[in-house]
Image 1 (cartoon, rainbow over the protein chains, first blue to last red):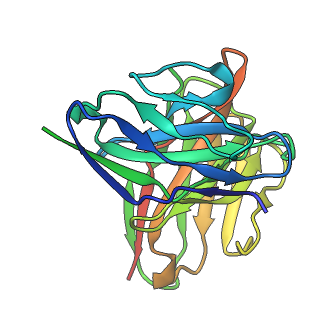
Image 2: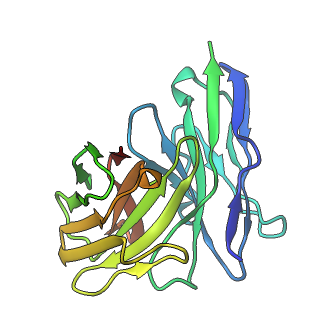
Image 3: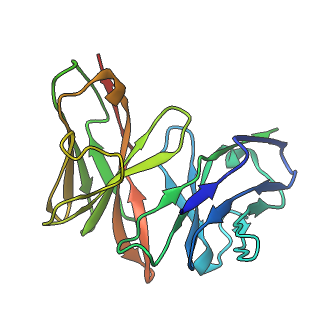
Length: 111
Length: 117
């Protein structure tokens, strides 16, 4: 079954500390992986997708097919990074680009 | 950028009544729209995929007769919660799919909070 697992509900760090939000997936085939972010009182928005291999707001994520992981990393966290982060996948098995979301990790960055 | 709106942003209704939620893509045409449900402090659960001009595809466990979806145009999809009950109280979010920079991307609405009393 297709599944996205985010093991941490809450991750708290101090400003300037490195951050890694974990994401593991279960999918038979070649999925497309995403990270979405939801800032306080704002709508969900795309942060990055593995296929574009971009770094957005200092965040990067590498797809590791061997470990079926897509962890989100940032070397130096900022207070404005505090938000809810969702890992999601879609894949060619779907006729449309429907997304399966993980349960989310709340990142708190303290000053 | 692509903007998706939802109306209303919140609604309170009595048990047994029906509520309609609108999802509009404001500056682009969306052949596909998605409806999600989010419980407090939980993830988004896909309810259905809505394609313009055709019947919606519902996820397993979602009652299609209770959650009526209509996608009458390329910019509007509606979700009607029929005969609402308190357990239908939730945050309903829609998204619209568009192609940007060669990739499909889902743009999300701000959500509608439904409270059934």
